[in-house]
Structure formats: C-alpha cells, structure tokens
Length: 233
Length: 62
Image (cartoon, rainbow over all chains, first blue to last red; front, side, top):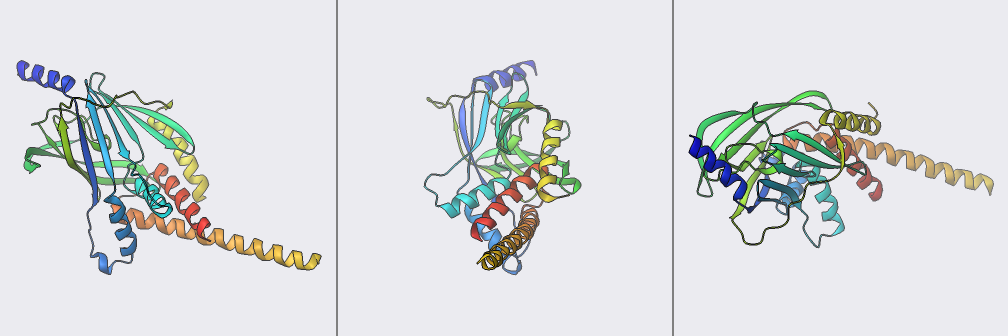
C-alpha cells in the first residue's frame, strides 16, 4: 500500500503532459421538433471548434479554452456565447502539492482569483467501468447543489477517471480523483478527451494565475449584485 | 423647425426604448433557451455574462 502510494505520488509529480478535451451537448429532445433547434444547431457547430487544453508538469496543471484563429465577427460572437453556456470561460491552475485549485474569472471587466481545496468528498466513487480511448475508467457521480439565478438548484454530474493514468487532473475543475479525468458530464454538457500526450519533451510553462483574490462567497455576492442590476430583480 | 426636431427626437427616443425593451425580452428568452439546452440553471455570474452578451448582440443588430 505504502509503495503504491509512493509510486502514485512520484508519478503525479514527475509526469508531464498535454490533454485536449472536446465538448458536446447531449440532446434530450428531438431537435427537429424543438423550437430551439436553430439555437441548438448553432451551439453544436460552435462546440466542434472548442478545444480545451490541459497541460501538467511537476505536480501543477493549467487548463483553459483554446481560442480558434481566424473567426469572423458572427463566429466570434457565437463563440463568446458558447463559452458561457459550456462553462468554459474560466482558467484553472491546480497544485497537487498544496491540494489547491485556483480559478481565474474574467468578470465585469475585472480579473478575479478564487482559491479552493481539491476535495472530492461529496462524490460517490463507483465500481462501474468503461473504456475510453483504450484506458479503463471508473465512474464517479454526485448531485451538485448550487445557488442559481432562480435560487437553490441542482445538477447531476458524472466523471470517468482512469487509474491507468494516476494523475489527479481533469477538465473544467473536475480534479482530485485517483486518476486522470477522461470524461466529465454536467447536465447535458460533455467534456470528452480527444488526445493524450504524456512525457513530452517540450512542455509549455505553467505559471500560477493572477487576479484580485476573493473567496468563493465574496465572488458570489459580487456576481449576484451584478446579475440583479442587469435583470432588475 | 423646432416642432419637426421634437417629432424626430421623440420618434428616435420611442424607437430606442422599444429596442431596449425588445432586446431585454430577447435576452431573458435566450437565457431560458440556453439553460434548457445545457440542462442546468445559470448561476448569477453566468446569467450576468449571458444577459450582457445577448443585450449587446441584440442592440448591435437593431
């Protein structure tokens, strides 16, 4: 047990790599009969252009959405909208040594930095297994409760992590699991791994994120005030 | 002349107000659509960002 833990920690801190995730929306209705079908189609089109990049080295990781080059005005506008819908506006810095995750938010013309601990205590780790890209993945799930614009809300979340790659990183803040997260689902949004490159010779520099440090609760107050101002209630 | 200017100004103001109201309605509908598609309600941060985007886009088009 001790040896495997030692191996796990050593691997966690020494392995470097780059993972690209893509995004898809799970259709819960027949889109041709849905009044939103044009909206859904344009979101699906723009989702194909989404590439979410996770890089890691020496026990630290950085995750962000890669912005495609050469987009016209209309696509740029749709891209901006899809970033919000797909929860892909934020940048994430993870330190496994400190067991912390820093989230950088560009909100209302200001850059905020929120620090959270890597904690998966509210997740249920199951024995359900499936293969993703040849890797054996285990399912973890939870019902995530949060304060939405309409009050208390919840969303079902599922993560598939692979102990074959014992690195506690993942997309969109889904970190801290005993293996790399290869797929994550929140509501109808799916983040699925596209490519995995481990132990690459030239890895991009990972630097801690900057911004005005606020607690998660402080940020929620700022966001609520701004939302109430724009929505008038 | 003053009367004509007043009519034009009032017309522009009324049209602008209508655009603002229409765009606000469009933005609120957009939030509901987006929430339906992604299967979760937006939090305050997302709702603010989305409203901002929808209002800006709509005003630019009108």
